[in-house]
Image (cartoon, rainbow, N blue to C red; front, side, top):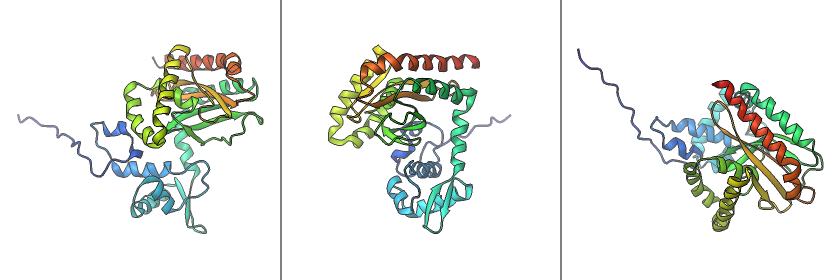
Length: 281
């Protein structure tokens, strides 16, 4: 009987790897579908403050050729993830994209539990409480509860904040393993330029503090008017890292008030979230 050999999948990939594709994927032995990665990079090009974007702007943000962008825009529009607005000659993200986020955050009542804890934290005073995820080299708010007088900054769901300077970003990096941090550092260095040495020094100090105090902090590091603390929370099925943070106007929320009033509730939220994982065993 002849032995049937299983063909090996080639690890060779065409094209130049782009930052938006993700370093982790490039280290995987499974085939890398470049066209899919490029399509997702187009969706990532839309920010919360963008009502509409044209082909040229999308090409600049993704680093893709305009011809490639036009082709992928057509596919994404056909699938319903984008809407073409002929009166402007530009595109807008459709509500179909929301279904992806709902599928990710809706497991096991995770979203409901997170919101409940966020509302409890926010009830304690003038603050903004945020659930965030990493988006390339930034953190993005996916849920936000705030008091009207909480902050002078214009922060909303979909807003992005610096990964290395913010409390949510530092909480994420502290929870990530050392290998992931090393993969992210070159892109962060390119982002911060000449300030990287100082940024890295402050970041490493923040990660060291996290290891002893159990939470990440950013007291004026991202914005001199803003103080915040944050903790990482792992989604029970996938292990994906979310962060819950509380922050606000530095004058209303000095570090000692954040620690005394809001930190216990943050830590209680993390403990409750982690208990969800026991239901899977």
